[in-house]
Every structure is written in structure tokens, then in C-alpha cells.
Image 1: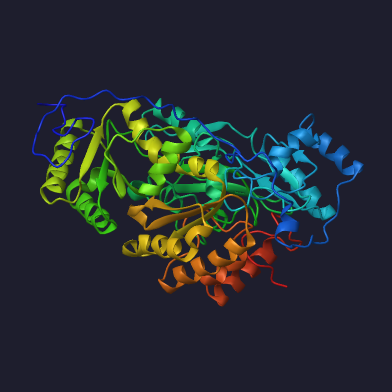
Image 2: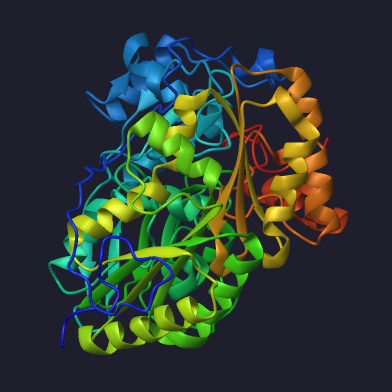
Length: 520
């Protein structure tokens, strides 16, 4: 029957029953954006103390500096300690700076004047978007001036034919998506932190997210950008052309640079049409080898409509149930696979999904599953995957690793880490993006422990390098991982990065202590 999925029940097991009435769902409300997720009330110790880092010889902010900033951004110079507190602590409450000044420009000209002045005075700065990063890249290490893009939140234009969106860097990802949906388009990027993260920060970290399997990385979607260099110069590469083969592609320097080469102020991004039909299926698997087989079958049977393929283990399901009170619509399984399809024809997409599910049942690759087609039920299923990070923050101090490697190796590292840590860890979980070989290995403990850190590092990085992987798949290097870059990049590559940094930022004022090791 048109518009009805064959496997449309709340839960279906190893059965050949074709049509079963839809059972009741419990609607889950997903928070729009969560900041400072760790529920531990105590502030983390100062970053410099915890990581034994010395402050570089930058100038300190004076009353004269504050007077100048007040002229540039009147009424938007923040020095109140209570207001600054949340801007000095990262999303997971694992690092803490001591920035004493927060500046809130509204446009590129104001950013230019701020950076020109700071460069002349040798004042270090930290660009900050939604502060949702996970590697300590968006908060000061010491007393760097925080430049927030929060007020740079205007859409500049949308080409209704090509789908090219031009906007300021402070636009929130979810707000952009809502704007685009009203015009029949959607963002090519989707993240769990979409309710808080800024598009400029997404570019600065080259965020991956849940739709990379379908739409590719930001490096392919971004058509152009505008950035202010450390000396205040404005680099305008803000075109909206699909093809422009004139000279070096300078925008790529700033995508993934984490605010160390300049501050992104505007972006032009190619947006796909909003799909007319979206289906989400949550499937249960007995082993990771079957998870991989399900993924292969997904690509074979779903092809062009496959928009996401995620996995998470039983430990992930346990923490979201325990800390967030979410419900598992399936019987307990060792692994779960979440599949999303999106296309232009509901009938066509349902037929392809039904064929895939039938084949997966016939071959015993899955033990149970559920399918959602309306928005509230889709959100309920996605919440089980997207809110894992939030649940882990409730579980204790979190050691987070964002790794890419050959997809068949993804879960081996989780298993070896569990064995290595034993009872020293509270929880060890593995989840991530099957479509791009991205594993999120997370370990929780009651509190930060140097002993546990020593057991994890460099073990995790050495294991990843041994299997030809990357120590940062989508989160960036930030402060926490910059000294481990050599596990993924050659000495020659790191040396060239240092030369580029020195050329564009000779005084080193842009987001110091982050992304690449010092060339000293």
C-alpha cells in the first residue's frame, strides 16, 4: 500500500510478518543546544596549571586598551567576571582560561580594527563561536582577549536557483537550517551541537557531522569565505561560484585552521535541496562484523538515498538510558545501527528501504529494528545517537578521542582499550560514523586522573597511527591534541604549516597554544 512501510511497527524481530500496526511512541524532546554539559559543579583547574604550560610574552590589557575597544565596539566590551566565566570554560568543563575581556563585534570592519590594534599591541586573541568544541580550541589558555562572533548572525543572501547561501560567521547552524527549509533548501552539515554552534566555527574546525556520507565534507561545500588576518587585513574570497580555477584556493587555508591564521567573518556555502521524504531506521546487531555487513548492504541497496549510517554500542545505550532517561525501542543488543534515507519520492524511498530491511532479516544480519517516518519519531531515534556526548558528560570526567581509520578496524580499538584500562575506567564506549570511518572513543572516570591519562596516551595515538588512521577526524587538534600531530602528519608537513603560520601571523597572536606545535 502506497505510503506504508512493510516493517513499520515499533519493534520487529526475526520474523517474516509484513504489516504490523504502529505501536505507541514516547516523544523525546531534544534540547536545542547544550552548553557546559558536564554536571560536575566544580570548575576545572586553570589550563596552564593542569597541562604545565607557560604563558608566552604577550602584552596585558590596560585601561587604555579598554578605552580603544569601547570606541570600536561601543557597549560590547565585556569585563564582568561572572559573564566571562562561561566563555573561559569549554563545553565539557575540562579546560579553563583566564580571559579578562570579551569583545562582541557586529561586522567585518569592527573585527579588522580590533585585530589591527591587537597586533600592534602584541595582545593575544581567541576567536570564539558557539564554544561547542571538544579539544579546548575555543577558549583562552591564559588571558587572551576573546572575540565572539555571536552578534555576527545575519544572512546576507540566498540564491534560490543555485542554493548558494552567504551569511555572517556567527549564524547558528540550526537557525540557518530553519531559514533554508523555508526556501526549500537544507544545510549540508548536521551536528549534535547544531543548536549552539556557529557556522564560522564549523568552518574553522572543518566539522564533519552526520551528513558527510551524503553531502561530503565542508571543504567541498564551501564556495568562498571572508576572513580577517592577524594584521587587520580583510581577505575577501567570498564568491559563490561552483568553479573558479584562478590561482591558489586560499579559502582552504582557513577551513580547519581553528582560528590560528585569521578570523572567519562570512561564508558562502552550497546548500542542497531539502528532501521531500525522510526515513530513519534503528537496527540491532549481535556483533560488529555484522554492523559492517549491514553498512555494505546499505550502500548496495539504498545507494543515492542513503544520507547517514551511524553505529553505537550497548554501553552507549546504557548511558543514554541511565542519565537522560531515554527509552530503547528495541530489545537489548550488543550494537545498534542508525540509518537515515532522504530523497524526493516517498514511495520510491520506502520501496528501497523495505527491500533492504527484508534482505537484512533474511540473512540474519539484524536481530530487531524499528522505522520512523514522521518528525517526532525520527527525533526520538536520532536522540539516542546525538545525545551520547551529553549522557557521557553526566557519567563523569570524559576522555574523548575522535579518530578515523579503516572502517573494519573501528571497534578493535574500543575492545583493546577496555582490556587495557580494566576497572580504572568507569565506562568505555565506542560510536561514530560508519560512512566515513570515524570512531568516537570515549572513556569516563569519576575525576581527571594522570594515571588514566598515561594509560590512554600515547597508546590511543600509537594504535591509530599503526593502523594508518588520523588522531583527529572532525574535532580538530585545538589545545589538547596539538603536540600529537606527528602521529598523523610528517615532519615536513608540520614544518610547512609552521611556516604558513609564521608568514600570516608573525607575532603569533591568533589563538596561541593551539593546533600546531610551536616552531621554537
